[in-house]
Amino acid sequence: QVQLTESGGGFVQAGGSLALSCAASGSIFGVDVMAWFREAPGTGRELVATITPGGQTKYADSVKGRFTISRDDAKLTVSLQMSSLKPEDTAVYYCTQHLRASTSGWRDYWGQGTQVTVSS
Image (tube, rainbow, N blue to C red):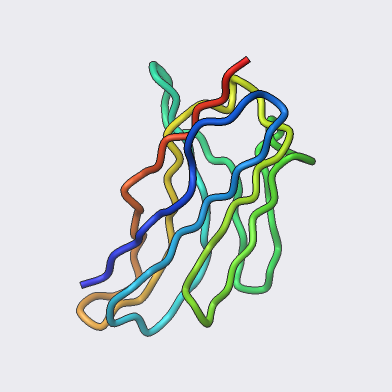
């Protein structure tokens, strides 16, 4: 059974930094795109950043220049380094990885979500 486990997050003052990490475990035979989403109260889930197997990255305009996504395929891990944090970055952050598991074909797997709270 494939699981994505997130770590990091927490409480930080505006202007501070936080790092999130997300590791996949289980019988995995392939890995494709990895990404981070976030969901603030009263809003829908928003795409924050993506990274392809080749290392190409894309960011939401709201986080460009402040967030950096990276991946380590050997560890099946995707990370999100967040700096210059703003109160509007407050949300639950979810990682997702497009994986091929032994029991199924390619599909998206999601982490459990981790809270990031930025105070003004």
